[in-house]
Amino acid sequence: MVSDHEKDFLSAYQAHMKSVYKELAQLSKMIDGNSEKVKKDVVVSKLEQQLAFFKQEFTLLVDTNQKLKEKFKPFQDRVTIAE
Image 1 (cartoon, rainbow, N blue to C red):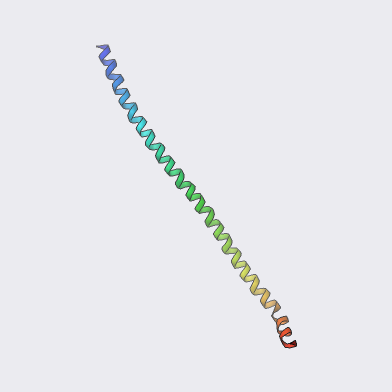
Image 2 (cartoon, one colour; image 1 turned 90 degrees about the vertical axis):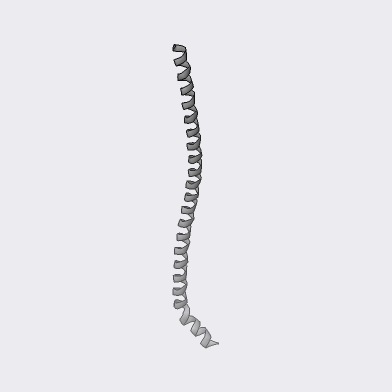
């Protein structure tokens, strides 16, 4: 009788461990998939930061260019008159 209970217990334990193993395998796949998404999110975030930086630099360069044009316009007018 103890032997039958032992066999039943081992059988139930093996079945349970198989289901635990399957669940662990599924969770492992999910983690791998999520880590790829996180990596992509990090890359996208870095690219967005770079884009914001370059937009800011572009705006600064445009403003600086405009100021320089205004600053040197009188000299340009003098050169044009002298010719």
